[in-house]
Image 1 (cartoon, one colour):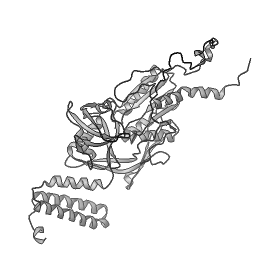
Image 2: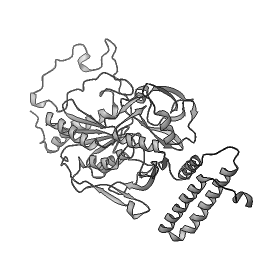
Image 3: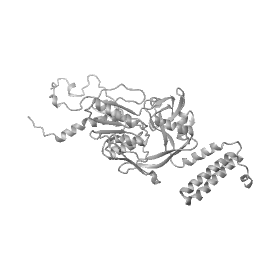
Image 4: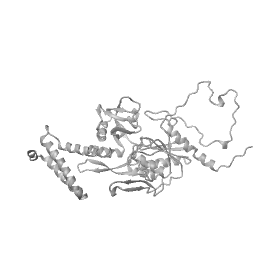
Length: 451
């Protein structure tokens, strides 16, 4: 062993040793007591690296060995902490801008398995039928066991027009199902809106990126300008995988008063403890609101849903959310790579941690599809279908119930899109908002007198 230790280690090793020395100095500055222990462990690492460089059967790339060691170290922490190469770091920055080339899915590790958090609407993966919760077991025939999220993303992204095959396991399947998907330019429009039945505003946020708050403000202003008598708003956060924390705070501020707490974070270091409050509330607090969530609603989506739920501003409807309650800090490194490090957990205004548990809806409505039952010819379903029934009397104009206009069915689109009439969760939200003012009126109505 003494001979091996005295061998020349090569220029790459000296660079690494200098790097390790700087790390040791950095550690000593923060915690002198722990400095010696850290130094001994880093010394062990440098010793192993020098032995590999000097004695391994083939020539080795010390840079790749160091990157592999870093990845192995971070893997001991949590699924969201990761080292990003220069290319991966650039891709991450592109994601928040809203355009990249790929399939259109957000993925993460769940139970150590590569899992689809949510497909992005109107993208190749979404049209192919990829669903939230799908387990990706292979990418182009390569097993994803022990594959990092960053490497999986790199394999699935590529030149538009080329294809990639992913093997998926999901509930109900006995073996993986292959999906061959053609890559495309993914342009993310984070806010989509429309008015349903001229009564309810519908806003869908697909993810939280740099301009989401501006796009939301524009959508809300347009809806109210064209339909000043709206009965309320449905905010659809289903299959929204999250995004930028500051955007979640700004979006919450569109529906809360100035000064309201949206979320707070707590970490091991005091510098990671922070409160995020509404800076400029828009005063939109005087209309009823329903927020739709599901298992694909994660991170920033859960922040918004939790804040609106805690302040009693909206009714949360759907199923339990994903349960990602941790905060990641992205740290640029000197060589152009980056470190995504979990530095804190976030809590709703009432102090709830949603890590692993998610946001539980006020009204539990499982995902389902409404199918209209076809009545056989000649079959009587109602009084009016019975032969010889009494004629119908026209009710007084003022007796027509509010919100009685049936929802028109829309044509079914590609992928997983449902028409409004088929979307069970959305219909429950619409029923709630359309009848809200009816219940308000009945509270103050006088007892009717019989004639």
